[in-house]
Image 1: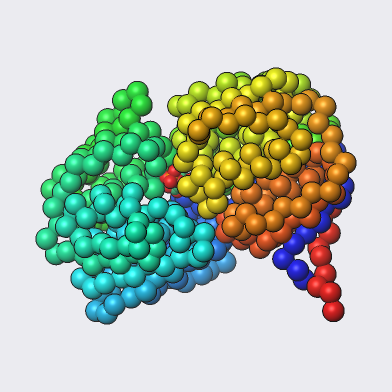
Image 2: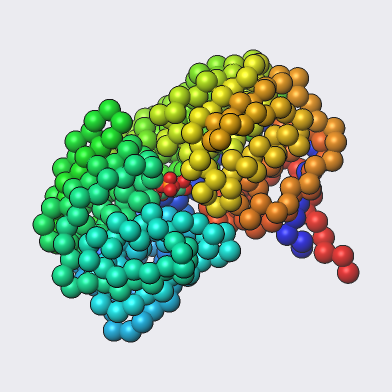
Amino acid sequence: MKNQIKINHRINPFNKIINVNGDKSISIRCVLLASQAIGTSKIYNLLESEDVINALKSISKLGIKYKKFKRYYEIKGFGLSGFNDKKKIKLNAGNSGTFARLILGLLVNFKNTVTLIGDKSLSKRDFSRITEPLKKFGAKLSSNKGRLPVKITGSEFLRPVEYNETRGSAQCKSAVMLASLKTPGLTIIKAKKSRNHTELLLKYLNIPIKISPKYNHDYFKIKGENNFKGFDYVVPGDISSSSFFIILTILSKKSKLIIKNVNINQTRTGIIKILKKMNVNIIFKNKKFYKGEMIADMIIKSKTKIKSIKCPKKMNSSAIDEFLVIFLLASKANGISSFEDLGELNKKESPRLNIAIKFLKMIGIKVERKNDDIRIHGNPHLNLSGNYKIKNFRKDHRIFMMSCVAALTLGGKWEIHDKDSVYTSFPNFFKIIKQLGGKINWEKEKT
Ligand code: S3P
């Protein structure tokens, strides 16, 4: 089978109930924190995607044993100094920026040297944002001009830091939080608001963390060197994976979708607030709290009259992984939608802002760009009939899945490359498309 697919038909109306895979951010954090606990942790519904498998393989190289059972993964930790640091180690983070940045936080006390590498896409991403704050703890870090490979040698004499996170990056905030666990004294963090799964988990694990929320920022004080016990955790469904099926349903005719058990933590629901402003109402049912997180079933219906949006900058962080599909919806809206200050989008698995603009222009949508601000001229009558080829996007899983949603809802004949990219974050993506009745042609290798 070739690594490309063809989509030549719009999806027919559907009325279905689905489950998406477990949340990627929470899965990676559970693996990393379980590796630091004393004793056994059981993680249910762990996302079995390449990013998370790379995290599991890496902790195993660091001496932590894990075992897969039918419904959960068991991980056995030996506490905050429990990595086996008898020899030099090379870790491969694959495509995962989250794992790569967070593991560096946990290596600040590693007595030997770890070399961290990744795939082509990860090797193009910035690591100075993480090496610089971690150096302040006393660990030694070097990189290839701010890129991978990064080498880290930990220190026995860590000192707490005061860190100001200004990008709204949960990865930077979390890496420093993880380093603080190993450091005596009080680490103080001021961070622009971003997803808060790390701090919620630390609270749940009874680690001394004080959180003071302010309007745009949060302040944290974390007292280090407190070991914690193994824990059980059931990972909820991923809202970022759900977003492809949310937009697919909105743009399909006469369809309805229920997505069960999705994480609707406020720091992740920017897309829901943005949709509301665009005249699309997503209903939450069976809301419940789980270990600090909020979970619900989502009900989504097709919508024809979509309003354009002037998207407030303060929503950028809580919708950061959903902008590709939000742009797609904006291309069917009535009027001009504007988005500001989206430079961080170009720092993801691919330069997503640049690629999204090219994509929208390819499907005949006018886009204006000024630095990192864009204006999308929506066309409610957008109906495609041409041929479209999606190639050379650094195998970015979210570009691939957004292209499939466009192909299944807008018409035209599509050839979309690098289908295996879905395994980075969403292994059940194709299974769910099939469940909803979407037709995908799997390209056969010519013999
Ligand atoms: C993530 C944080 C975000 C997000 C990424 C996952 C995390 O990145 O884009 O997919 O789990 O912390 P940044 O923190 O770099 O914005």
